View (tube, rainbow, N blue to C red):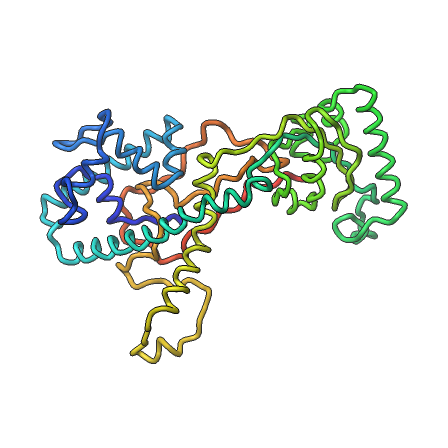
Amino acid sequence: MKRFLLAVSILLVSCSQVKLSSNTAGGDPLDAVNTGKDMVLIGKSTIKEGTLEFLAKINPRVGAQLKNPIAKKKLVENLVEQELLYQEAVKRGLDRDNEALTKAALYKKIIISQALVDAEVKKKAKTYYDDKKASEFTTLEAAQITIDWLMPEPTSDNKDQTAANREPSADEKQKTLEKAKQIKARLASGEDFAKVAEEMSDDKATKKKGGNMGDINIEDKRLARRGMEQVGPVAFKMKKDEVSDPIEVKKGYVIIKVLSDQKEIPFEDAEKGIEMQLTKQVKDELVAELTKNNTIVYADTTLKDAPKTEEAVPAPEGVPPAAEAPVAPGAETAPAAPAPAPEAGTTTPPTNPQPAQTQPAVPAEPAAPAPTPAPAPAPTEGAH
């Protein structure tokens, strides 16, 4: 479900005289970010390039939108809608409405609370990077030829005799290995790896790309999910253009070719993904510590004795969601954490992402609470 912090969105994109805080030094903090080239004039207000850059800073999905002209236009249109509605609300005096001001105060509390989590995450991001530099943030590009276990085709009489339902026999393993060795012999004789992959590989997602599975790291979790955790350690002992012997994996054998030298992902490129990956864990640890160090008394015994549940409970109408990063109007919630490399065995994402799905600039009410977004699943794994 897409979630929006309505009041925050209004405050971020409006170029009005409303202040986030009465004691903010230097005037309206929105003016401080709403700088640079004019994007849109709306009456006496202007949305400038700096506002888009600020939204991209607090929500990486917006950064992706800005690289796509169609998505960028849609984002700006949403900001215009937000500003038009805001200006009309001010004309009607709703900026002085007690209920609206109370909601705004609640959102301000949420954003400041989230700032604490963000600060703690930033402290730990570099340590995480340094600890995982060799295993997660050093990559190489590789290609594969997969040979599935040579087992009987499923029929109505032997539905349970497939690789998905049983382990291959010793004879089936031997026959599969012999086939893999024949393929390796062709490669050793000088045949082109990509052409052999297109002809012989059983991996449907990569065979049409000459077996190219993109960048991998030595402990690649995506490969591990496919039962191919043996590939990384072998690949990282090889040199560029070297071809491996058949490697036994869960579904058969795989032959890999290293297509590039090892390369280190800079911290600056990995930082956002690390922060998104750590956010939930850091928040949980912080809340546990604060809970331990503070006295919390439930005067209402029904709250104290209520059973704990992991399921999200809808909040009363008008109550803001749990603390989370601000979301720009029309943008989805936090995107998937950028992985160190594209999904092994899948198509590499396009340089210009497709426009994100958008929503009306202002939802009727904030969505129900949800946990702080955890890293989203990696791209869909290739068929194998």
